[in-house]
Amino acid sequence: MARGGINKALVQQAREALLAKGQNPSIDALRIELGNTGSKTTIHRYLKELEDQEAARLDDEALLTRAITEQVARLAASLREDAQALVEQAETRHQAKIAQMEERLSQQSACSTQFQQQVQDLERQLVEAKQQMAATNLELRSLSEQKSRMQQQLEDQKALLDDKNSQIQSLEEKHQHAREGLQHYRDSVKEQRDQDQRRHEQQLQALQAEQRQLQQTLSLRQTDITQLNKDNAKLVTQLSESRKQLSTQTAQYDQACSELRSAEDQLRLQASQIDSLNHQVGTVNDLRLELRNKADSIQAMTLKLTALEAELNTKNQIFDQLKLVGQ
Image (cartoon, rainbow, N blue to C red):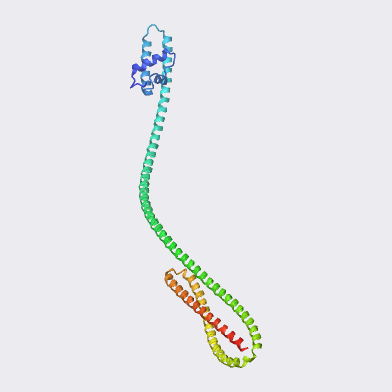
């Protein structure tokens, strides 16, 4: 354990302990024996005093011979020289260590100054980073709010788009229904015409059979020719009137067909307008009203055409009967 300080008595005790162990009492050995305390200069000074005292005591011994005294003196001088050399070497090493320590201290001081400057720079950078972080957080909050507004606008646009798509889908469905209704109407008109044509052919066949029967009957009723001629004159007059009426009805029928074709053209035009109105949803109510009006008009013309066709069929039957009677 290191001691608080050394004195001459402690150095003497350490020297005697080393001599008792048979070791050379050098300065380093004495310092180790003293617990690594005391400077080497102090130890060297106390050791020199002890050696001088011992040399003086030896000189005073009457029992020692001069040769021993001289030998001891030479030995003491040699030891002092060795000790002085060791002290000088130790002093030199000590001074070198002191210079080295001072240089290290200077370097550490410079490093400390540099570290302090770096710390100040880091603190300044930290303050700037905090300010920049605060600005970034503020900008981030602004961007977050802007993002929320844009998301809300996007949702509104999506809802509006869904509504537009729903309206367009409804228009497409109604347009499809209108096309299907038109096709159904055309099919029904065609079927009605086919039925009328078949019925007309059947009636024509029946009339032809009746004509053959009338021809047979005519051969048996030659006596009624005069009366029939008179009746024929009347019938010719009626036939002429019927032909005029037939011509009028035919013109009306042609006009109805023309109106029907015009209605079909208008309907196709309206279908084209419906396609264009898919991009103009704001006019849906007007389009619906116009489609209903057109449908009503088509229905009215259909009823009128049906009536004209029925009237024409009636006139054709009357005409055919008159023609058979004329034959």
